[in-house]
Amino acid sequence: MTLLVMGMVDPKLPNEFLSSAAYGDLLEAALALASIFALRSNSRGAVLLVWVTNIWGFVDLLRGVRSVLQLNVPSFNLITF
Image (cartoon, rainbow, N blue to C red; front, side, top):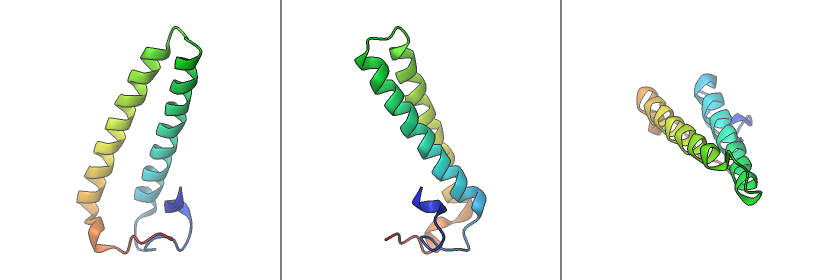
């Protein structure tokens, strides 16, 4: 979520890239926590939720890599404090 805080990354980076990366990671974290709770409670759909979480994480990673390559992100200042 630090990608959405003003002044944390290069202001020339497109907002679409930043919000996509931040909210994709937030959704992945929420799915991971839901998976943990489902597994701990022996829920029927726990294994399915773990699969959905892993698939979403992989798709989010691929989208992030594609965006990084398209925008040439290493040329921007990405230092976070």
